[in-house]
Amino acid sequence: MNVKDHGLEIRNQAIGMLNTGMTQKDVAIKLQVSLRSIKRWWRKEKLGKSQKTVAHPGRNSSVQKAAKIIISKSLGKRYKSTRKLADIVTSRDYPISHSTVHRYLLDNIGAKSYKRTKRPRLTEKMKEKRLKFAESRKEWTVEKWKQVFVV
Image (cartoon, rainbow, N blue to C red):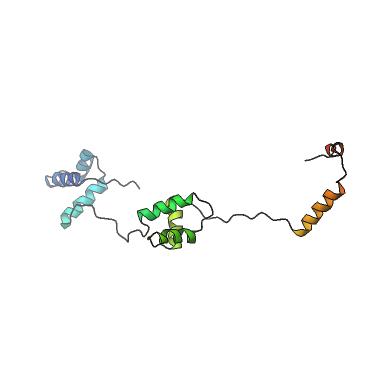
């Protein structure tokens, strides 16, 4: 949905044209505004409501601008959990929860959570097998090693 905020001047101009007897469609064409906007403004005028743009309904974001900057900069640093990020932001006097940090990262920045895959470490059995292999071939010459086919 494409939302375009028209100034108060255009709104008042449209209301004036409608009061002079022009049709809503003609006003929309003349001012290059959608017919839906003209109808909405005219309805507000009939009800005696103000034409000023009101703020969006709902609660303000708990993530302040400074907190957003802190989170965005620390995103480049690897292996930060949302809990650690929340602790960092809270320690700088911007109290925020880890779930809020997670929601901000997901919705606003598009960063998804992931769990790093762990590479298996060598077990004692593997180490013993490698040592046996090396000891059994300790006496091999360079010529013998050149004959080994490596895939």
